[in-house]
Structures are given as C-alpha cells and as structure tokens.
Length: 383
Image (cartoon, rainbow, N blue to C red):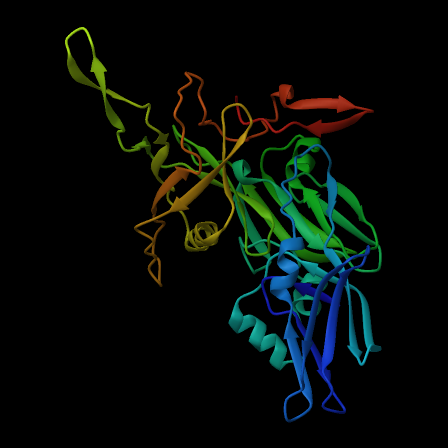
C-alpha cells in the first residue's frame, strides 16, 4: 500500500475476542520503530493512525540539475499485529511518501473507496504530477521558474516524452519500474533542446498528461528566486519581481559599564549586536492561479532564497496583504516579507542575494557543459 504522510495512515483490525492486540511497525530494511498495544471497542474494531510515527523517517530532498532523471525513494516499512505473542497479520513493504492532500479531498476519496494514488498519482492518462501550480492539464510558467517535474512510478516501466509543439523536437525519458518519485529536470531538457521558451506536451505511454507553456520572464529590474517545498513535499520555484527593500531587524543593545581607573569613573561599552536580514518586496503582478500557487509557498515549512554565490538560504516568508478577489478581472500583486532564518553578528561586503533569474539563454552557450556528447545544464542564475 502507498500513503502520503501528511494524511492519516490507518492500521485497522477487527478482533475476534477481548485480548489486547499489539501493533509493531518496523523499517523494511530492518529495525523496529514503534510498538503499541490496544483493546478492541465494543464492535471488535481497533484502529491506529501511524502518520506521526512515520513522519520523522521522511527526508527532504533538494536536487540539482546535473541529470535529466533522478529518483526519490519513499520510506518503506513493515507492520504486524500480534495477539498473545502470535502474529495474526503481516503487511510488508508499505510505502509512505512526503506531502498530502486537503482534508475535504481525502474525505471524498475515502467515501468513494479509493485513494489519491489510484485517482491521480499513478493515473498516467491525466495530470499525475506532484505540482501545486495547477490541477488542470495546462501549466504556464516563466522560464525563470523552470525546475523539476515529479511523478510517482508503479511496478511497470513507462515512457515519458516531452514534445516541443513549436519546433517538433522530442525528448524521451524511460521511467523505470518501481514505486519511486521520478524527478524530471525540465531545465535540463530545455537546455538540451537549446530553448528558452515554448509549448511542450508531456505524454506518458502516448497519453497526453500535461501541456506546459514556458514563457519569457516578466521584464523587471529586480528578480529573486524562491525554492519551496509544496504540499506534495516536492520543491518548486517562484520568482519575485516587484520592488524590494532591505529592512534588517537589529537585536537589542547590550550595554555594560566598566571602570576607568585613569578618570576614576565608569564608562559604557556594548556588545556587538545581531541583525536579521529582512527583505520586503512585491511578488509582481500575477494571475489568480499563480497567486494561489504563492499561497502554497506562504504555508510551506521549508522556503529557500537563492544567494549570489549559488547557495540557498533558509528564509521565512509571510504577507500582511494576501487578498485575492474571487472574480479577478486583472492581475494583482501582494506584498511579501522575506526574513532570513539566521541572525548574524558579523558583516561581509560580499553580495549575498542574487537579483538575476535562472534563464538559460539560447545564444549563451556558457550555460552549457558537454560530457560524453550529452549537454548538461549548470544552474546559472547570472552570478
């Protein structure tokens, strides 16, 4: 069975007597991680929700663009039920993935006796990808936000093709068998095609799953790149193009008195104080769908800001003006406050934040390297 860790992961059993039932959860690779004993209710049923037990075993994977296809493994676990030290139920090789779906959607799928894997994630005839940009079959994004496209495999092999409908170029990727998250680097594919924009059909086994329109980034004198963990537990990029202002927050002054024996008096000195970098910026004018995508970022537990030296900085992103008309007639911008997670006492003259996008220019081959006749993209944010 497959599960998402942010939703309930139930273990249910109907007991034939009143004896206590022991649940044992262990890693598929070996090692017990949880043991719990419970009694059945008056109907004989016992239920455990082990999602919180599994969460510490779900990692965060931030990939680079050095390969077109990479894999993220779920956490595999076994469970067994014991009564009087006798095993009455065994379920091996259960897979739990990061992320989850809203409660109303989980409830609707449960009422239909199905789950999100059968309905979407392993349904390769529709949009099966782990993105919160859109739930539809058309996705529009600027080239500065091109990153990874994620899909969950099953026990069969599949062929994923990316077709440039403008120039009739095709890129084929073989998805191996296995219940893994397959991370396809769209930026790698676009650079291999030597394209900066275009319309691309994404097909799996010949079925059209998604059409992606990659557009030129909006003209802007400022551009910040945020990388956040979406509701599926995967990382996606967002550019911030509105006017940005640095407003650092300084810590409290620590002043103390020392004795000056020359003047026979006290004088004040202070300790060096901390400062936390805070950037206040407009996100840039967006459509309703792209503003809802930003809301997922605002709720994310993991957001990173791209630095001038290629480093990602952990940040907190908030807003005091997230207002979207239910019937939007024109694009709007919302204010964002981007706060570094780490305060600093010391200063360096080096620029920490990059203002340039990750655009791979078709006529700028400095963004390419060639290895074994295969072009590989190096993330180039214009440093």
